[in-house]
Length: 231
Ligand SMILES: [Zn+2]
Image 1: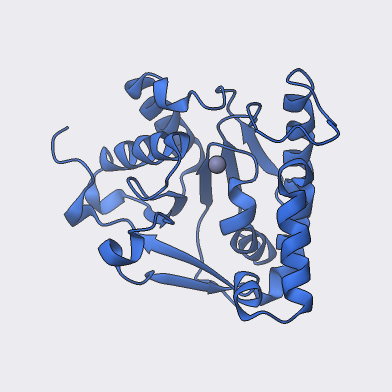
Image 2 (image 1 turned 135 degrees about the vertical axis):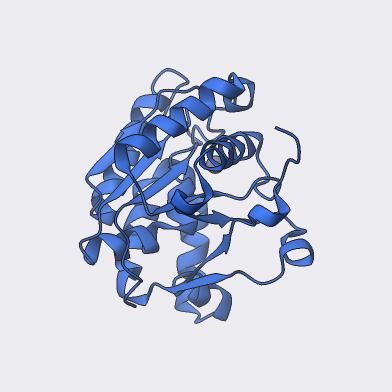
C-alpha cells in the first residue's frame, strides 16, 4: 500500500518489541517509500520477565541480548536511525515529567517530523507505555497548533472500542509482511512462545492471525478531547 507522503516519521516507544507488534509493517512501508523514519526506544527492556526455561539469560546479560535484538529488528525493518534513549525499564513512569517532555521536544526538534507514532494515553495498558504517551502528547501540545505534526496513537486497552470507536487510520501492510515477521523474530527472547503460536495459527489459515499480518491500526490523537485538561 502506498502511504501518504511524510517529511519524516518519528516513532517513540518504551520497550524493544513494542514496535514489532503494532507498527513494524508501517515502519518498513515508509522506509520502502524512501521516507526517513527515526525510532526512539526509551529503555532496553532489561526487566523483561522472560529469562528462558532453561534460562538463556541473566539479569546482567538480558540488556545486552535485548539491545542486540533491537538492532536486529531495526535491520529487519530497514531502519537506520535507531535511538536508544537510556531510560530504565519499568521505571519510565517515575521519570521527572518535565525531563521526559524535554527529551521528546529535543527529538522532535532534531527530526522535524510530519508524523509521530506512539501509544494513546490512557489506552496503552502498561505504566511505561502510559508515561511515554503522556510525554509525547505534552511535547506536541506545546507546538503551535498550525505547526504540529500529525500524531498516530496505538491503543489496545479493553475499553478502546467503547471509548474511541474504530481506528481512524488502517494501513494495509501486506507488502511488508516479511519485514514485520523479521522484526518479531528478532525479539526472540520475548516473542518465542507467541511466534510459535502465531505461526501455527497462520498455517491453519486463522483469520485473526492473517489479519494481524495484513493491517496495522492507529487513532488520530484527539486534541479536542485531550487526556488532561489542566496543564
Ligand atoms: Zn512495551
